[in-house]
Image (cartoon, rainbow, N blue to C red; front, side):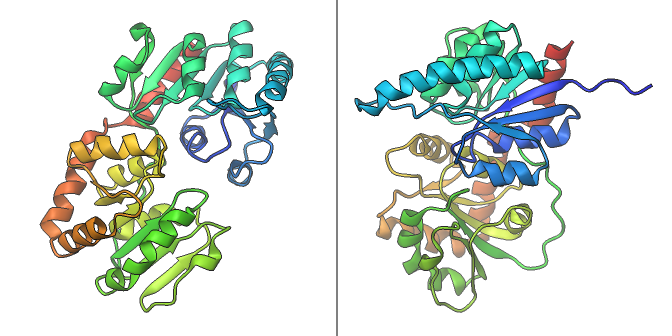
Length: 340
């Protein structure tokens, strides 16, 4: 007789950063899943491709500044709470998992009200406002680095798990490349900043540039250069082939690069949590940090890295060693302990 699978509600959206670790977990832990995402976010295509059923929830936007839309969004939040409560009573999940985003807030509130255990995962160095709101209602808070323990009041809830990502199924590298990526949505600022360096990069290795679906007009004409609008299944293969990765500083990309022991140059999104991610790694000599617009610093770092295999290997090793081992296994242990 087959054992009945647990029912798990996954919640996140608006960006791929809050979605990717949840999809990775779903791929590695057998359960019946339902994903709650944002109405118009980029995550919908990725979730659909993973063949996980999903529903959308319009919670409005979480703003830290005064705006008249905040008044309307208070009502949206109240409505989304009751919708979440109805969903939980209908679906009857055994567990709710989230890695942040405002769409998760009313669902976590409803789960707490319905006495369904919640796991809140903290990827980034700085805790986002959504996770701050949800933390008191979580049964367990999983963190990526030991330094994050002080970000939460209730230390008894915290489990150092690492960041669960797609497992390394890397094959032997046939050709080394340089990979440039702005994350799930691409990044116009990064694309504009990096274009002057592409001919120099391409003189060392073939350059693969993930522009983002809306940024195809930013591709450049250069030898040894391949632009991509967007990649999913081939992303790990491209990362595995990379001798150097130039990227925004989202924690999901960073974690996958760490797993594969890759040298990173990070160009964080200006005035965002990504800057703290990049500063943290740079302090540990685990990546090179360049702020968008620092052309001379970028030129100097690229020259150093591309002309020294030892330097690339050193920063890649530091990055790999910075992350806890067996993050997926650690996270699954948390799930199993709560399901018991």
